[in-house]
Image 1 (cartoon, rainbow, N blue to C red):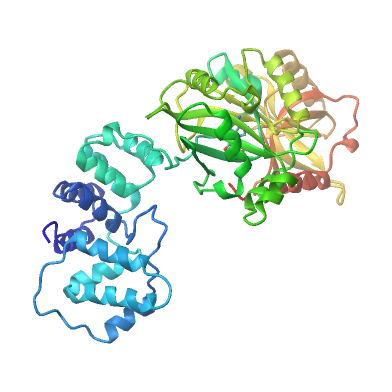
Image 2 (tube, rainbow, N blue to C red):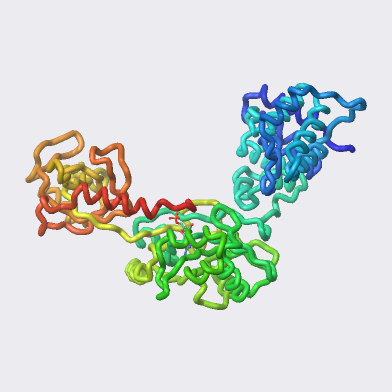
Length: 529
Ligand code: AMP
């Protein structure tokens, strides 16, 4: 058999081990891959990052250290006629070993490993064994491999990282690079890509601003993300972690077959368990439904699912992820005719309108809103500002215990307020955050004056005051905090009202804060995160 020899691969590994510079390593790997055929480059890329089988293959090698040691201990006889081992031979032997199953498979696997080892020198064995156990220790991480592929293909590293998110298979990337096809590579059907993710935003107003004055709001469904791949009558469904959950969702498959008017499409969606009245059920119910592998029919009847499709990534032979969101949405609408399957959408420049939309959405049992920049491309695997999630603000009454002098425009004002809740057990006020948001200029002025009246001490940064002024704050999340003695901090706190009607003794308590923290934690304990 002709082809690239395993010995050359080993030579490269030895060099890599002795080289410390990252750039030199990248060079070495790229020049080596350049000498290979596309299929060999694929094999070499896997092996270099310590993989003995194909990334997406469903059959792991399953050869334990004990088996290898048995082979080595028994002593290996070298074959009479030595032909150099090629990468292709080595790989196909490993594939047969991985595929061996059932009775006698252990013996068969061992025999294959023995046959391979028998054709290797001492140093070749060393690298083979390191690869079998996924520990190359020559400093070629997946990231470095991607950089080498970038170098090889002449694309910038960022672009290759993006392609990795789409293709999700380092061997395949190396192969495409050697073929010179990486530039045109994109998505393929039944090969799921990592979904685009959202960042947190405080308010609808902020989202509108961030998206250039106008944005597309959609309900944020509290279910499970589904990537739908359809080709003709074949439909497969993948989760956010790219596992195939088609068998547990025959009802979703049926809906997709009926409703999606395209012979080839990849759609992005969320699926939510609902009650008889159509109201969204807690997230756990959706998870339970997806986890069902047996008695699926029964589950289908017991827990109906609501499918909401919100994006399209691929249509009739080509990817559409680079098109702006509004254009993708139009394509989506042309493909999914049943409007009830589409995520509702409100495109607006008005925060008030968005707030009203949010109220309706919450009524239906959903979690909040997602704002999507109408101009943005679909960026697989990315958490960026193009998608912003907005959850309804929670509110707490807290007391101001200190304030910091402002800078810049807020010079001369006490404008950053230290907020505290009441610890019922000790009777002390405990700090849970700071905010400089929510007041108008006039209110800042007035607050500065009032705080100075109740000042207990001056500090380098401002004043400590008698806990007297109560304010209502909105916040998006309660977090654990090592900074405050209370142990908790309010994320994105902002003043929504000055509560002169309330005495400090009636502010919210640390005990309540703890309960609220636990409550949100229950919800966040998602299996899919
Ligand atoms: P999070 O899981 O809190 O980071 O929020 C992002 C997730 O919200 C996504 O991964 C989706 O599973 C989910 N989601 C719910 N509704 C939508 C929607 N309309 N558009 C995009 N993602 C959504």
